[in-house]
Image 1 (cartoon, rainbow, N blue to C red):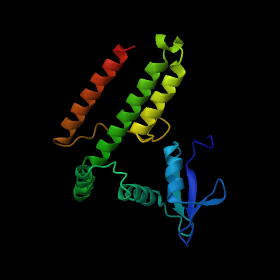
Image 2: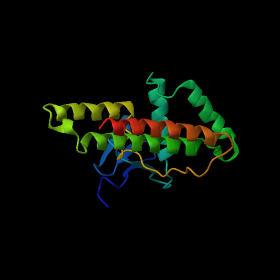
Image 3: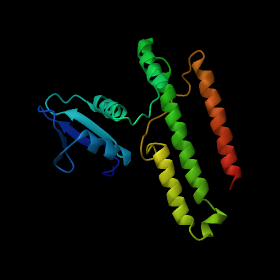
Amino acid sequence: MAEQDKPLLIKRYASRRLYNTETSDYVTLEDIAGFIREGREVQIVDLKTGDDLTRQYLLQIIAEHESRGENVLPVNVLNDLVRSYMVPGGGVMPQFLQSSFDMLRESQSKMMENMNAMNPMSKMPGFEAMKAQQEAFLKAMTGGFGAAGWTGGAQEDEKSEGGGEDLDDIKKQLAALQEKLSKMK
């Protein structure tokens, strides 16, 4: 397994300091957010107990960004997330979020493939610069959730009453957008 494929191991000491085991130095939450934006998976463990603290620290990173005015999550989405914790078993929210991000990555990947694959514009002067700008724009718009950024399997077969219909509508809309993109070739 390549070094970049393995999660970056961060150890939390009793002093609550975070230690990067690859570079042998201390890191901050902002450093960890940077690793993730670059497409690197991280795993944060308590040195003494061995407990996995990754989820706790990722939520803390999101909360800090939101509190600084970098509002990515609208209030109604936050309300829905809180409600999903009140539903036994978490409801359909985890599967919906997983499927949504999977579809986002897939459509981003297909869009980049369409730009690269036998595109007559690729011979045009300045195409590489335009392509680089498009990639940067997509990365900025998706918060860096590229194909290398965030992995996981969608559980599309698990649908509950009402929730599955919304997901089907979103899938249909995404399929229509992908079809339009492929026709633009």
